[in-house]
Amino acid sequence: MSHPTPAPGHSPTEAEFIEVQASEEFADLRKTFRGFVFPLFVAFIAWYVFYIVTATFFPDAMAKSIYDNINLGMVLGLAQFVTAGLITWGYVKFADNKLDPASEHIRAMMEGRAPATSTQKTEEV
Image (spheres, rainbow, N blue to C red):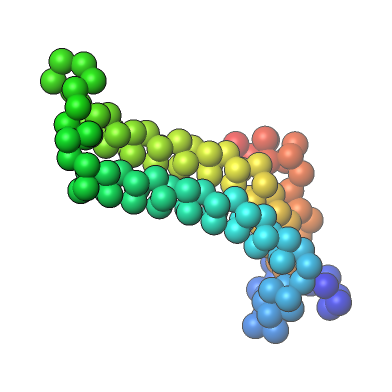
């Protein structure tokens, strides 16, 4: 950023927000976020549409028994919940390791304080 380092406890101005938004560091954060979220979003929507289309147009296949009274439709339906849970878990891990440190660094710079190191974060928890 081209403006001087603000004093600790500084509340950023609108101009500073706009400047940070135009910065390479913020662009990298946005690119990292989109690079993870968009492909997973597309994959999950494709998986969901596959499930709906299969259930709608191939009901006999979905009714095929897998084990006793459990059919393919039930298994695929439950797999939707498992997939959503796995995506959520993966996103939380990704955010903890990639997004949160980068966004904390940007926030600390804007507020005029030193960014927390991994040692400081561990001590805070």
